Length: 191
Image (cartoon, rainbow, N blue to C red; front, top):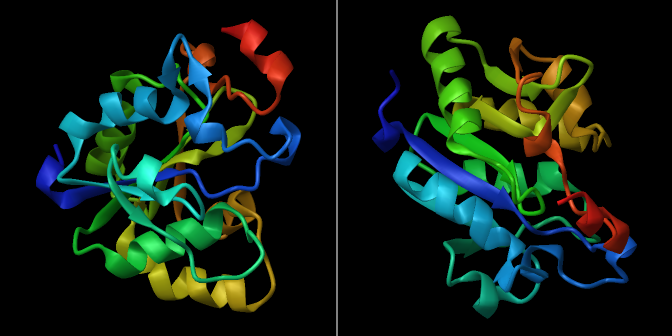
């Protein structure tokens, strides 16, 4: 099993939250706790270092991890946060998780790590039996230059980048609730 000292996590919190009327999703309260706290609580014991990719409310996010801001202008999406994280880590693996999925659990993290241990792929990504969920992934940090080239080509789709690499889909069809993400106010009714 890959040791936690070889894994850094990044929680993606850098979007503009347009479907939440611009409110910073990671800091929206669910049962009196910010969404990001649910993810941080689960991941902390599984990694050596926790990064938060955020482009605003930096002080609030620092309570949960070391804040990094992507260097690409105009909210260029999760890949901007991932490439920034890759540029500051020294571990061989980067665990990527979204800030707006409060039902994430240790099973997700453990299966991604087990996949990487068993298969030694470039990327192990969660799937629900139908499609991949690209913001739930364990990625080799050696892919940084590959990702920079992808971004330089003008592409921004995380799923497309994953599929262009040596990846393994990890089956989470028995854990469908972990992928519930709170993108708009109506989504809170799902929890």
